[in-house]
Image 1 (cartoon, rainbow, N blue to C red):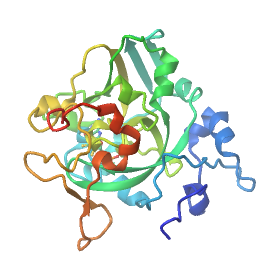
Image 2: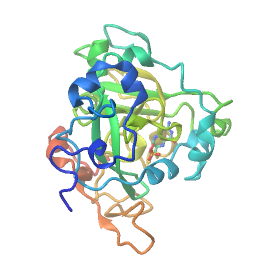
Image 3: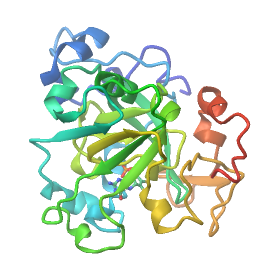
Length: 308
Ligand code: MTE
């Protein structure tokens, strides 16, 4: 049972009731098919298993898409599922600017036609001490940055979410200084674990999860994984990030998952797995959310209690 999702099994193999068609990957075409092959009977793509996927059992679609944080649509966990349908996600473009060879506005379709979409089953740990396992579909952020041509002197990447209060009612309140902003150091952005997600369970990513394209950085607290991105800025200075702007004492720039560094108002030593039921025991939180073998070396010599 523990190995049910190991080896070359992916969600397209084990969930026949799911229609495995990521429309946008399908439209973008060849890359995803070349990687995963085409299911002979149904003509829908199967994603190749990734060495980066966990073999833990993913949460149900309903859990992943109905328990969300997306403050542009309200602060309640069910608000995004209720209100995010109002967001128009097509047409969509992402502006890439700053220290890149090819700055400009790239359409979603243009980006997807150049990217290889994979399935990545990742643990996801929110700073509020709940967690899930999510089967994302997406491409490595490094591929997008390489497409734009990053200047070798650049040190950081900043991200911004769309501002459109007429469709995102939460933006009519000033609780977060909109746009929602996030940032990564260049080596974090270029790490193969860092992806831009465009799907979940092989379907287009739902609006409440950050359509049409959101960041996923699995070794950091969930708030770093910014949704519905419209702007990427490459620079040599550390970008401002929303939660750090709101409360710098509680939320640092790095925000690596760390069971030894408590949030000022609660412990980070354990977490509640969403879907485990009310009586389920909390489980210990892992350093770097369990991705230490891949990413710990990025922080060699740094005091992670100070650089939290
Ligand atoms: N991105 C934007 N633009 N706005 C947000 O409010 N919330 C963050 C992050 N990305 C947020 C965001 C937080 S706090 C978390 S835990 C994750 O999204 C939640 O992602 P999920 O709803 O897909 O699980």
